[in-house]
Image (cartoon, rainbow, N blue to C red; front, side):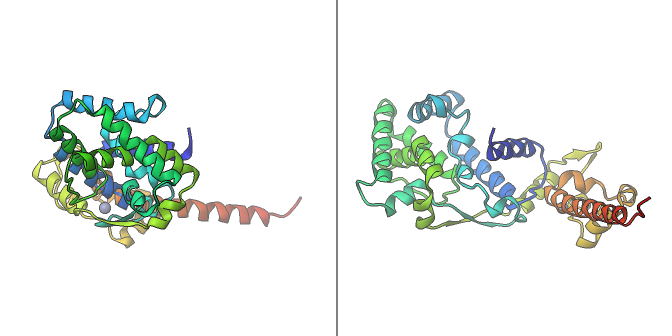
Length: 281
Ligand SMILES: [Zn+2]
């Protein structure tokens, strides 16, 4: 398993726990999954599984996906992206969508040929589906890509959007050579304030931790001084009466993990310097 797959798996596990976003990437994932759930609400489970089946036919046996999160996944194109470590925020710079790259390339180039071929194949696979279904599926994809405000004029443009953006062949192209994506330039995505919204929701839902409902104080981030103090004095942290926030906030977990790492490295360096100075018998 390669490093990115491991990172993504770890990541999906972390998101299962209901905690406040720790990084900009968490904010993005929470945002897009919420938008996607809204767009999917137009269909029942059977319809959704037929859509997934159709899209997997397009992708091919080796590249099947188990759900829409992974099928319409812009994060796949974000290896080494700064959002993995940046603090939570409401704006993220994303790589362009394949359909945006398509607009920048000449007809007849390898990229254009693959893209047009994918669109033609999906047109055939989608033949039995009514227009409303195809437009609805394209809306789910646009939500998953955080492509807000995207409107599909007709069946044809919806099919192109689905086929080109979810194409396994263009993924392969990208992993061989991403220069066309770089040349097309990033897109700027505006997110809802997920930290504020989740805090509000946790208070409203009376989410419980350690058998009592969370309070506003439990949802308040530690100051930089507190984080540093707790990292150097774990025993004081346990006695501080402020431990509940740590279980709820991915951001503070990231911050304290960095300091604890720093403390450990400093201690190791100190020990090895001392050992180096021990008199030789
Ligand atoms: Zn926090």
